[in-house]
Image 1 (cartoon, helix red, strand yellow):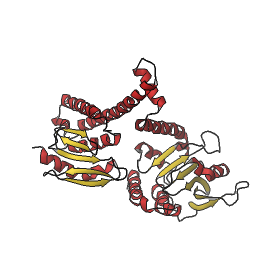
Image 2 (tube, helix red, strand yellow; image 1 turned 90 degrees about the vertical axis):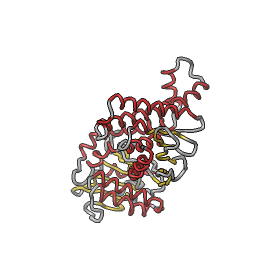
Image 3 (cartoon, one colour; image 1 turned 135 degrees about the vertical axis):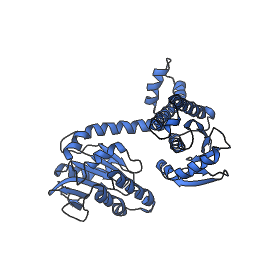
Image 4 (cartoon, one colour; image 1 turned 90 degrees about the horizontal axis):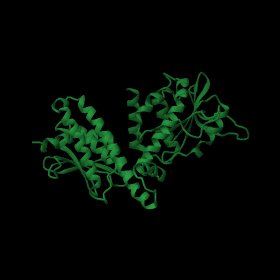
Length: 367
């Protein structure tokens, strides 16, 4: 299997089993040891490569242990501290890593709960672990741009110099991306003020702040929808379906979908169209493009579900995205008799597993 496929397989294992994991030891056995062996490629049963419960007495702190130390040529290269999968990671959990980092040759420290892996080095001061990670791997939302960097830490192609040299850029780009994502979800006052002062000439009063908080949030969602539409347009340009769609038709498709998205966002103030719903819609639309021209696939949001329709017609439902629940998400797909079958999903990528049913639904309405 390719490296990315191995990551995806482990991510699926974590997704399927995490609810059954309640202790730190179970987290190590089920998730972290497979990460060390399958992803990084080290033999967890060879003490010349992986040392569990690694001890290196530090000052007055005697007998403290780091969960794992990865060795190369007899020297410690990577330290790993583990927490149980049900526990969110905090920098306070890394106290042993801070101490051990200064007294070993390790240049990489990892704090993990089996689902999220935070990678640290010593960019701010030599031999002193940074307080912020330079790379964050979330197995529930893998950033594909980080995969090449992660691979540099594997046994077969271990390239410490290369990853250290790239660490500063990775650190700040990662922090900026996470900040932008947080602002898209819930814009803070500074973010709202930044855009308000560039779009509105008056004073930034409390009333204006409240008004523009909603506008900035809505504009952010529409901007992201535009970007997804542009990527879809590019993909259509290289697909087998593309020759049946002229360049002007493709442009019209993108414009129409933007107008529809904007109209739906404004249709009912009590309905909140989320980024996740828009992303799910684009996945359904991409699948549908093998059967019909993309401008025929539209959406309407409702309080309890997000509908994907053919020809903007309620009598031609393709799918419904049930993403408003606090726990389980569902994608509902309609058959030719307009009966909806709901399928539970844990991530948007799982919509692709139902591509055949989505195409069959379209075929039942497209005539």
